[in-house]
Structure formats: structure tokens, C-alpha cells
Length: 66
Image 1: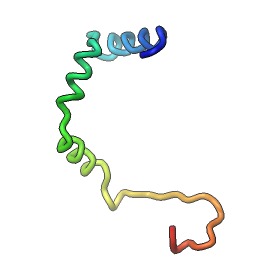
Image 2: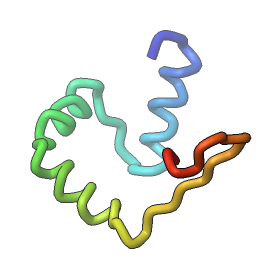
Image 3: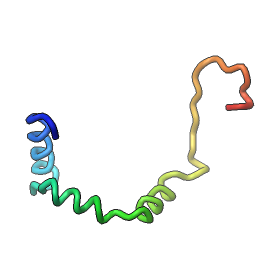
Image 4: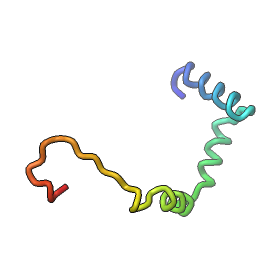
């Protein structure tokens, strides 16, 4: 929000996607409503051990460490 084009895009995106322009204060108030427990609940739903993937690129001398 430091450049005028960033401010314009901020308001344009809100108008197009929501049909309402929220103030910065309203947006920060929504952020403040999010609790750590909310983040953990969503993270547990998104990150599942059976769906994890790993890609390693490059020569490695000891593949056991990876």
C-alpha cells in the first residue's frame, strides 16, 4: 500500500470480487478475529501426512540424510 497503483488495485479488487470496498481498519479487524486455534484447525485439514511430497534436485553424496 505504498504506491498509488497498489492502493488503486486494492480498491479495484475489492469492488470486483466483493461489490463492496472495505477500509484497511475493517480488514485488520477481520485479521484480529482469527485465533491460533483457527489456523491450526485449517492446517490440520490441509497438511496430511499421506499427501506430502518432496522433490530434491542436485547431486547429494548421502541420500540417507535426505
